[in-house]
Length: 600
Image 1 (cartoon, one colour):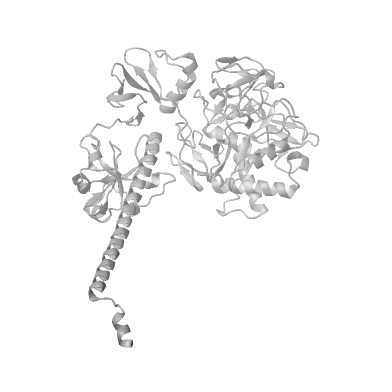
Image 2 (tube, one colour; image 1 turned 120 degrees about the horizontal axis):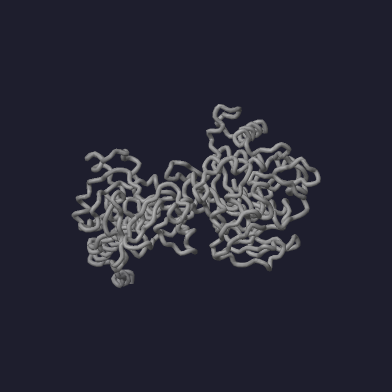
């Protein structure tokens, strides 16, 4: 029985075992090859994503600066050329290592050798051989290549397109020597020295670039511009330092000053403009790439995720040198803060006034519970301004989507945007509550300005400011008469922004009317925020005139414990210049008083 049972039991034959082993080897090799291929494909995808990211960033950089971010000349391109990726028509310029340090908010998977190469005029042969984990760019076509390449089987990939896709048509250049070519036109010939010529798409009309020096205040005599476009033409000519004029008539083409923005910053960072000046950018903000708004000297504009716009106010760190506070360390004691405030006050001393201080008065004044909370708030501001070299203020007066008629109107969402109704009829404590809670951004404080901050704004304007017509702002304009750039009752000017509105009866919201081609008379007229470029300096609108603005400054007046700065639409520019202080009740709001926010 046992013998027969053993005969009936089946075992694994050598042939079956051999087949099983072969199958397992094949499957193992397939898995290994798949993993290897997936790793190669992953590397290729990373490089292609890098190239697409760089192309987008460099396009923005080029639009802002009129040149590519290049670190040094690069000549080791034989492998890329052999792969058939270099166009004889398009890639006519030199190749350069991309200056990754010049590009803001950039994250790459590759390109690590950028840190190793030295900023020489040209890489040495040894450097070019050893350092290939680099991205290079052609100065003419702006095509981008990865020098090391990604090898998959018998193919090597150097960019995000293949030899079959190489552009054989001449590149449609959008800049010539930093001069922009407008959309719908193409470069014909010439240089900046002899004159750049462009033509329309059907080559029937030719225009020549007319450079300008200084500030263009009026429409040139040999130029024809529609009345509704004159303000935009002047803004463009000054922003781009020139315009295009027909070679056969007085017709002009001017480049629109568009509101272009950088990608959103995913973390706090330091922004460096083309002059080398810096400002910190809060997380979640974008930086303007519009000419005239992208440098500190002209008024750097940023925008938060709620579309509110802010302008950087520089307070140079050099003001602390050889002063009573020059320790180079973060302040930590009340004595430190007092010294820092004292240095700031000395720096902006021209705009201080006796009887007004940044001290706590009462809970009713601005909503602070006691002197300690007020002082903690102020010290946080002083520390931030000291360490960061400045702070932000709202580009516009705080506005609202719904015009306010009186103090009983409900408190709506505050907005720091153009073409909004001024947020008037609020008390100083209501204004502080609005900005501190509803304009607050991550890790940053929003608040009414302290008196010292208003003074620092005026000092910054005195140091850097020019009016839109090219007039240099002076201390006299800020202290004695701000009529040239404020909305006051004694001044007439034109408002051609069709989105703007005005009212001659500011106590009634039903009286607002459109302001397109409107001539504001020599009488009291309230305008929506940012209604006219005339009333701006360093990208800040309506600081002088329109409405007075509540601050956290304390007057020596127990009955009226709130301070508003600047003039308003119902007063003359010589009576209430931008530095002017007026006292107000802690329990009343007014038609000619509103507020502006600071951010630190």
